[in-house]
Amino acid sequence: MTEPTETTDPNYDGAFDAIVVGAGLAGSAAAITMAREGLDVIAIERGSSPGAKNVFGGVLYTPTLRELVDVDDAPLERYVAEKRFSMLTPEDETAVSMRPGAWHEEPHNDSYTVLRGEFDEWLAEQAVEDGTVLVTETTVTDLLRDERGTIVGVDTDRPNGELRAPIVVLAEGANSLVTERADLKETADRSDVAVAVKEVLEFPDTEGAIEQRFRLTDEAGVSYHYFGEGAVGDAFGGGFLYTNEDTVSVGIAYRISDAVDRQPKPEETLNAFKSHPAVAPLVRNGRTVEYTAKTIPEGGPDAIPDLVHDGAVVVGDAAGLVLNNGVHLEGTNMAIESGYHAGRAVAEAIEAGRVDAAALSSYPEHLEGSFVVRNLERYGWLMERAIEDRDLLFADLPRAIADAGEEYFRIDRDPKAVHAENAKERVLETVGGWTGAAKLAWRYRKVVS
Amino acid sequence: MSAQPSVPDVDNATLEDRLYTVKYEDPGDSHLDVKVPGFCAERCDTDDCIDVCPAGVWQQTDDGVPQIAYENCLECGSCRFACPLNNVVWEYPENGAGVTYRHG
Ligand SMILES: Cc1cc2nc3c(=O)[nH]c(=O)nc-3n(C[C@H](O)[C@H](O)[C@H](O)COP(=O)(O)OP(=O)(O)OC[C@H]3O[C@@H](n4cnc5c(N)ncnc54)[C@H](O)[C@@H]3O)c2cc1C
Ligand code: SF4
Ligand code: SF4
Image (cartoon, rainbow over all chains, first blue to last red; front, side, top):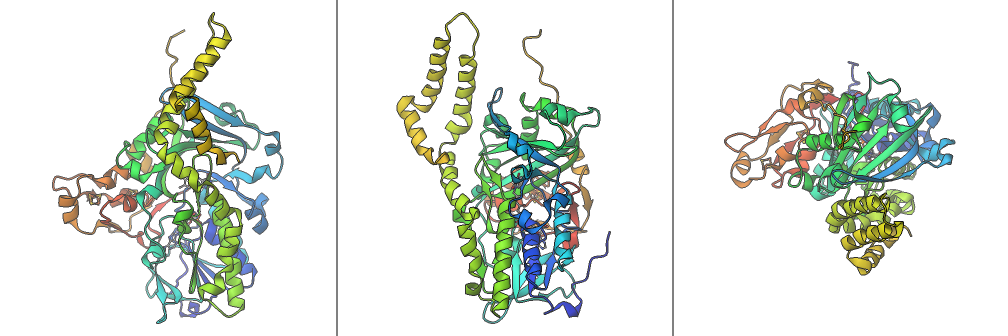
């Protein structure tokens, strides 16, 4: 184990303009931005290295990252050449798949699979190269305030571990103990948080398994999302499968409020998903090289806490900035974007010799104008509706569509028109006839507008 | 041809084997606890902490106060959100101890 830098060094106190809590995506993006603006930055990470405690699906989205670092240098696994969305009943699969030719070209739609252990360490290294001081194996336990209530630093689990600086950037992720303890955020309701489990699989006995099973060459990869009863029972959530260079990431995520009463344990739900007839052929003979678990904030725009305080900003998952609505599972780009805007705002405030919330307000202003808040608001309603309609959307409709597909393509001696009519009837009966279908279309019209 | 095409067997590793894949350093004592044991015993009959945990940390006991196998913990945080009585004490293991993921 590498010897961690001691934060007890008295020279540290007051030596920094900003303290970053957590060297994940949001924290490192903020550190890079601030260091480039000439600030003295220290990042405190609880893992033995950045990424050592981090888990995601996943696909890293890189539009903002590209502005900050040389993405070609990063430890990327594969670019996403195919996106596929499947509805699973317990027996059937009905899927939509996209393989646009353009995704094979740089910059590959800014979507790459990565593994966080390696990637986060690399990103933090970029921050260090820009002058950030990185301290690992150190957990921030609380915030320090002055008599006026302004946040003036952090306390850590190191002996005499207090550290002071004008600004604290809270980038601690979904399990935001420090932000909550400091009363900057309420603990999320369990219906606004998903539990996720994931396995990384390798295929030692099946040469070329990934290329063959997913129809891939070179550095192309896939992102598969699954919904419906066959994925996560009657919980609200879904399954995912991503290809890495030599491994496959497979997992599930669903709301904690469902995990406690509608579902077998997460581990068993994962087993059932992997054994689904549509998934098993893709993961068979896989050897588990790692099993991981994490939470995902999914409270949407209403759950975003105040982003700026006197002496502090909140970024990334700690601020609930994740879009997880079934179709999209995006937090990486929002973490990086928020870290970037926060970093800029901190630099401006320090330059102006101020640390109060008002002086930091360009961060929430820029974030509101960016895709982060706009996407969250755009899809916030979708989550609410989808939860109200969950039985229809995740169980009844997938079954009806699978049946309808089977009927539509049925080969027998009846004319095709009969099958088409039957198929239509099967779907209509589930959604409540043409009136029901029209109502449903109206309810979800904004998905495509 | 057989009528029912066989779904290939997926050999799912046991929870024990899964947990073995994760590098772990024992912090020495538990970073998890319950605030008021009496709440678990008398006011909670759902055991949501047990149901949500992907690592089998929380275990049923006769007296209704769950036993905590903290060394299995993957530090996901789910039990903290799951407990309806907000009765879970949850700290990070000190100085980076606990799990270290290689892939993540
Ligand atoms: C299963 C799963 C699948 C996902 N899939 C995708 C996907 O495919 N695409 C996508 O875009 N997003 C995905 N997401 C969301 C995405 O992972 C997050 O939005 C993103 O990681 C948030 O970054 P962050 O920097 O805010 O937090 P994190 O990445 O969680 O980083 C927080 C950092 O802070 C450190 N830390 C925490 N507390 C302390 C403390 N007290 N002291 C010191 N250090 C601390 C942690 O160790 C960590 O390094 C997924 C999430 C999960 C859980
Ligand atoms: S859910 Fe909470 S109250 Fe109930 S047994 Fe678990 S910790 Fe105790
Ligand atoms: S943090 Fe996660 S793994 Fe650890 S005890 Fe709680 S639910 Fe289980």
